Length: 68
Image 1: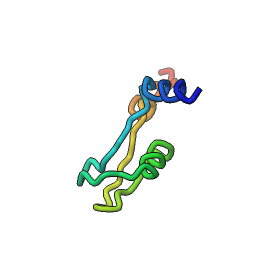
Image 2 (image 1 turned 30 degrees about the horizontal axis):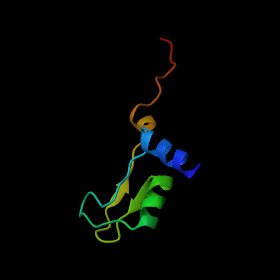
Image 3 (image 1 turned 90 degrees about the vertical axis):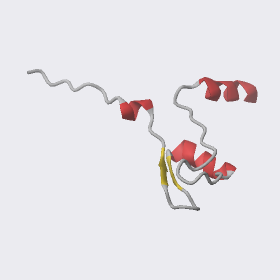
Protein backbone atom coordinates (compact mmCIF):
# COMPACT_ATOMS: atom_id res chain seq x y z
CA UNK A 1 0.00 0.00 0.00
CA UNK A 2 2.85 2.38 0.79
CA UNK A 3 4.37 1.61 -2.62
CA UNK A 4 1.20 2.82 -4.36
CA UNK A 5 1.38 6.15 -2.55
CA UNK A 6 5.03 6.59 -3.51
CA UNK A 7 4.26 5.84 -7.17
CA UNK A 8 1.38 8.33 -7.13
CA UNK A 9 3.69 11.05 -5.82
CA UNK A 10 6.32 10.34 -8.45
CA UNK A 11 3.80 10.46 -11.29
CA UNK A 12 1.98 13.52 -9.98
CA UNK A 13 2.86 16.57 -12.12
CA UNK A 14 2.76 18.98 -9.17
CA UNK A 15 5.22 16.94 -7.09
CA UNK A 16 8.66 18.51 -7.24
CA UNK A 17 11.54 17.26 -5.19
CA UNK A 18 14.01 19.91 -4.10
CA UNK A 19 17.11 18.46 -2.45
CA UNK A 20 19.13 21.63 -2.16
CA UNK A 21 18.77 25.39 -2.07
CA UNK A 22 18.71 26.71 -5.66
CA UNK A 23 20.63 29.81 -4.55
CA UNK A 24 23.58 28.44 -2.54
CA UNK A 25 23.30 24.68 -3.10
CA UNK A 26 23.10 23.87 0.62
CA UNK A 27 21.50 20.44 1.06
CA UNK A 28 18.06 20.47 2.68
CA UNK A 29 17.37 18.07 5.52
CA UNK A 30 14.62 15.47 5.06
CA UNK A 31 12.43 17.47 7.45
CA UNK A 32 12.95 20.66 5.45
CA UNK A 33 12.00 18.78 2.28
CA UNK A 34 8.76 17.64 3.92
CA UNK A 35 7.97 21.18 5.05
CA UNK A 36 8.66 22.50 1.56
CA UNK A 37 6.32 20.00 -0.08
CA UNK A 38 3.52 20.82 2.37
CA UNK A 39 3.90 24.59 2.82
CA UNK A 40 5.41 25.26 -0.66
CA UNK A 41 7.76 27.81 0.95
CA UNK A 42 10.90 27.58 3.07
CA UNK A 43 13.85 29.78 4.04
CA UNK A 44 17.33 28.33 3.56
CA UNK A 45 19.21 28.24 6.87
CA UNK A 46 22.51 28.83 5.09
CA UNK A 47 21.85 31.91 2.94
CA UNK A 48 18.33 32.98 4.02
CA UNK A 49 17.05 32.62 0.46
CA UNK A 50 13.26 32.13 0.19
CA UNK A 51 12.51 28.91 -1.65
CA UNK A 52 8.97 29.09 -3.03
CA UNK A 53 7.45 26.29 -5.10
CA UNK A 54 4.86 27.43 -7.60
CA UNK A 55 2.12 25.00 -8.55
CA UNK A 56 0.66 24.79 -12.01
CA UNK A 57 -2.47 26.44 -10.59
CA UNK A 58 -0.41 29.46 -9.52
CA UNK A 59 1.20 29.77 -12.93
CA UNK A 60 -2.05 29.56 -14.94
CA UNK A 61 -4.85 31.41 -13.16
CA UNK A 62 -8.37 30.55 -14.30
CA UNK A 63 -9.73 32.85 -17.00
CA UNK A 64 -11.92 35.67 -15.81
CA UNK A 65 -15.62 35.44 -16.53
CA UNK A 66 -16.08 39.08 -17.46
CA UNK A 67 -18.47 39.47 -20.36
CA UNK A 68 -17.75 42.60 -22.34
